[in-house]
Amino acid sequence: MAPRTLGQLVADSWELYRSALPEIAAVVAWGAIPAGVLAAASVALTGIDGKETLRAAVDAGEYWRVGAASSLGLFARGLGGLAGLAVYPVAAGRASGARVLSSEAYAYVFERLWQLVRTFVRQILFILLGTLCLVVPGIILAFRYALSQPAVMLEGLNGEAALARSKQFMTGYPGKVLGNMLAAWAMTVLGVLVLVFGVGLGTVLGELVTPQPLHPLLGAFQGVAGGYVDALGGAWLTTFLVLLYGDLMRAHPLADHAG
Image (cartoon, rainbow, N blue to C red):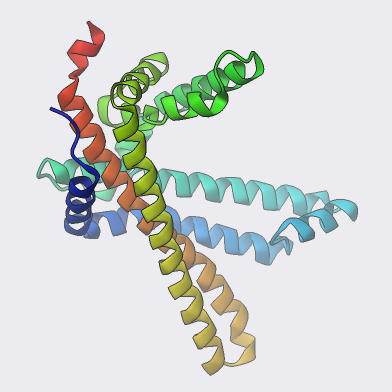
C-alpha cells in the first residue's frame, strides 16, 4: 500500500493534531515554557541577546557572561528539543486510539535518547565524510537520512539500522516522501510565522496600555510565549511525520527490511 497523498496526509494529520491538542499542548508546555524562561533569564542575567552583544562581551573580556549565556542557551535548546520529541509518543498514541500523558511521553523520549544520539552522530559523520570525500553530496545524504529520527522514535531502531531504514523509505518513494515532507515543512513555517506574529502584535498592543516599567516583562513574556507557540505549531509537522511514517511501515514491514 503506497503512502497517502499530500492532501490526505494534511487532512488526516490536522484531524489527529486537533484531537490530540490537549495532550500536545501539555507535553510541549513542559519543555518549551521552561526553555523560554531560561532564555529570558539568560538575557536578564548576562545582557547578551544577540551577536552584537555577544561580540561586545568577548571584546571586553567578560567571559563569564559569554559562558553563562552559552550554557543557559544550550540548556534551553535542549529542553525545547525534548518538547518536540515528546510529541511523537503523544501523536502515535492518539493515532492508535490511546491517550499518552506528559510523564509517559517524556519517559518514552528518555528511553530512546541514547539511541537518538547514536543515530544523529552516525548521520552527521556519514554526511561529512560523503561531502569531504566527494563520494555523495551532503545534501543528498541529508535527504536520504531525513527519516532517521522517526525510525528511532516509532520503530525503536538506532544507529546504522535507523539510517538504513530511512534510506529504504527515501529511495522507495523519493518524490512522494520528499515532496510531502517539504510541503509539510513549508506549511509549518507559514503557520508558525502567523502564530509568532500574533504574539508579537499582542505584545506591541500591550505596551501601548501598560506603564513603561512593565515593558521589559512584556518583552520576556513575548519570548516565552513565542517559543511556546513555535513549538506548538511545529508539533503539527510531527503528527504529519507520524502518519507518513506509519504508511511507509505498513508498505514495508520491519520484518521485510530485516530480511
